[in-house]
Image (cartoon, rainbow, N blue to C red; front, side, top):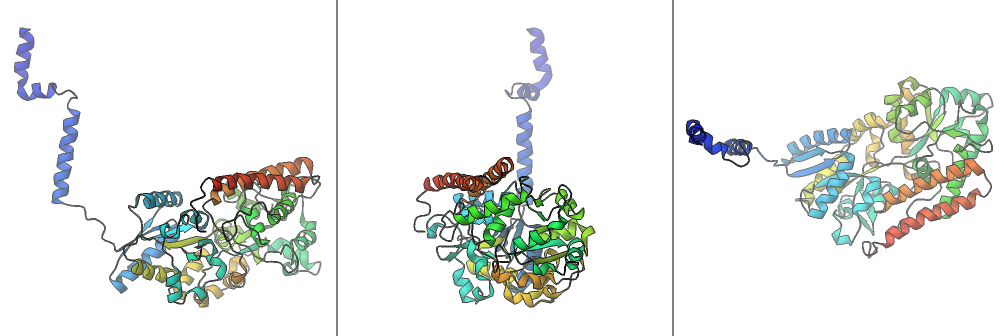
Length: 471
């Protein structure tokens, strides 16, 4: 006891106090560091953002273009815009959370088309976005936009977003393989007006397991939706009604699956994937000689399939039937202004500058992305009328412009993600059915499978009946 007492005396009062702390020295050190940090920030405060507007963007190319535009906007107006690049999935999650909590809501935000409908649900006066129709009408912009480009962002007469793009779909094909083959028979690709014409006249190029006539993905609904809209169908209709099991959908599925399923010797299409390097290798090696090609996919081919320079051409899609639609659409982005925007007029002023500004500004972006702007006035820029060596000196801009007003409408919905998931399941099931049993009873199976998928979605919709009250 005496030795312990002597030891305590020898250590001094500070050491004894530290030893008596129940959690040891670490909490004290953390507290000291926090105090020092607080004192430093008190003397050297971090300057908060003082931008007049905030904007969320998920596309790097878009963000770069808008930051440049924001610099010009600041010089012109003296007002600043904080353009923030945010991951695609994070945009949707953060925005939904921000709208629910009513905090940290950006003044402007770009949203991918398939996600947009989820933000338009509920009573009109509770939707988190402003109706931009009054701005568009006041400034005479509505007539500059192809009507169907607004369909995905129009709900109950309100326009909650303006389109960044139209994305007409064409057919990209191996001209070095196809054109000589057709020329020997006195034909050109432009003569193949329907899908029946296309598969019949090119059938001699088909070599099972070595060369196919079209790249079609059958593990998801990507290609199916392109074909579906080309035939006048859709997953949803203009009033939010579910259409994924109507007769157009049944007919599209019954037609598409035999193209890709190995049964009865009818397989003419194949896929090595849509987004990874194998897609480009398949095209480069001639494993398939054509692919469905929205405008944005042309720039991806240029970037990732340089070996095909001068070997590819674009033509309108063959129609489902004589006189039918020669294009479709896939993908898209909208720009919306939050109902809570600090200065809606200023937000629209910036939105108008970046979406409906000078033709030269759109032309610069078109040269990089090949994406057709839905602003007719911008189509006068020389960029839309330049020959492209990669595409055999075709004038891409004029090709897309010629189809702009033919692009079919796409109708979004808050239930689109679940509908697409069930549609993917139905496609896989129908593919398996046709491979195993061929054409016998196939249409009846397609009808039953699509109805089952649609019934699941309708049950989901019925569980939230009040959200869409007043539609």
